[in-house]
Picture 1 (tube, rainbow over the protein chains, first blue to last red):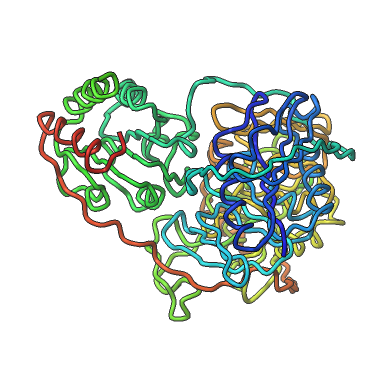
Picture 2 (cartoon, rainbow over the protein chains, first blue to last red):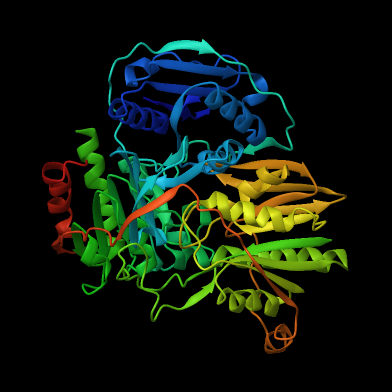
Length: 321
Length: 250
């Protein structure tokens, strides 16, 4: 018997949606391993672990300190390692977000244990078995993790949060001391409301077919209508039309939204690799032979400058009606 | 400024991936192997920092097979001074043994800065650079899109969801490079000629086994062929209907 601990993520004291996905994965794995699912919340004083029992936590550790309001890599890693070493844990699960991608290897290095990052599934099959896309999704590993414990980071949107009421007993835990070698001094937030392509459940991406940076307004309007994030192809990022943060594909982000719009994107192999795990792909392109139509569930052939505004209007009607 | 840059030899991003006969690795025949694109940003940053300091040394370190010498030479052709290959026949998927081998090599090297690409475009671990920092007890900023080094201190910016985190630290430190940090230079012909004569030391990596057992490597499930709902703006109502009532995603 071994327990599973989910290390959760907050922003401004509020847990992120992906935290419920991580907790759900921990609960499912704990049941298969005949153990308990625990959660660890690290954040500013006042951050709460209440309500996590609903998503399957037997126990919730809360490390609250105003020094931990922003992600402080060394303190977060030391606190997590302390909690993991203080219990009987077989697996530590984090989200493969900007924070989790930095924190997971720190924790694994401190514990001297195995790490598998950005996995899309975790199972128990005589050992912990993960599914891990590599080469930006062009191939997929099934790996057995033989470390004890093992640290795993889970790709956002890979596991749907499920309610599963458990005790969720909250216990305060101390914040590890030790040196803070690097300090996060601030988070500049150019657009607090902007959704991130890697986390959004709907992504609207634009490519070279938009013909110029100024026409991305069409993409932004459609994204706003569907409540999604704006993405971009490598060609338009390299051209300087959009920031790298929005790039989808092998040298950008790999995404798994429930709905992905590829607008004016022909579908280079490295872009297709990054969207392969999207649930539904819609392609809008003037070239009927564009490779994007080979992977799209639905396509419209034609002039995006006519199609996209109409689509935005129709979706607004549906959402309002 | 003495700077180490850790690099990896990976399949080119445009390569088509085929599964090898053993079903646990890729078939590298016909695949072009290159310097990991994120490592190019790290090499460029190291060269710029050395140039700005007016003196120093840029050392390229890689864990890999004998063929990785070619990858190290690519970085030397960009302008790095010398290379070290920690040779290993096979590099597994557990990042910790690789990080340990690098940490052992770097520990007593007297480096002011150790740079990595934030991720290798083959295994996508995003782990080795951060682990090396932990093993050496050094400050680390991962996935940096901006880096300023002055007076023994560093300030890095890293992209997070919807914002940019600003991290400060003292040297020596580890920084991993993201796209956007700089525009990597291309090796000039003269650089390529000079790289052939630069020192490249080969040592045994002595990797531990690690805790990751490969069960299987497969190609992802093919997406089933979709359908064209129509042409032009007149097809929009049919698309919206399909998204609502068939796919149920609106």
